[in-house]
Length: 349
Image (cartoon, rainbow, N blue to C red):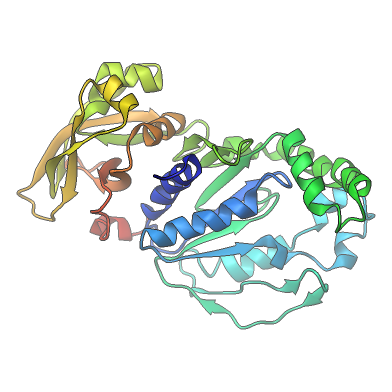
């Protein structure tokens, strides 16, 4: 049985695997210092690979400025950390642009060894076209453009306790670590939250106060996003909508071509209680235009899409499809039927 953390990471991985923008998917894992970005990024990369998609993980530690630049405003300066820590220009030129529209797919993994403060001139890596590149770091929405942003939302008091314990030896003791977090790292992060509002701009928000049971708060777009979700089953039911979304949804009838409907027996008591049955429909891709599935295209917020992700059991994975109407929509498909994405999704978005 999968853990709550594995389930949330799996839903985010499903979302990323459903993206085929015509170039590698460039994903930022953003958040305040010691929010849990690096751990989540590594686990998310592994979850994408487990779904059969190419993935790689980079950390912005490999794109720090040299120590002389990072500390030129003072070792304890919050402004120095906010403005001088990373070489965002080099990262954009050497990573984001080669992996973006029209790029040559050749990107650098790092330009500096942070511990020794030594510049590196390593050869570029050639990315597969379907790569999902997951990058963790701070301030990632200040200057850079991404295809997806996962914001790891952790309260300052929780992150401070984690970070000071983690960095006490590196920073010369617990007292010194607490001072560094208060005066430099988290002071800079407070400026970032105020100026950029990164949680509102992110396409995915994960509450990470409890690392064993993170909360998927939003997925599929920024705070004001509205996305299409095609339902052929219980999400069309007003009682299910009210239970999970707090309202009945706006929708219109549509058809999913090239998919055949089947049935699955649900064992999750909570899902059975809300839906009123343990027998739920499920669809599988056949590619045969004679196979069609009727349903409803619903308009949902990114927060409601996250709620739908948590409602659906692990027999289902979310993917992006094109409906008969020509609209693109997310849909929950059989989890063992996602090896080949629909052809339209490989074209530029």
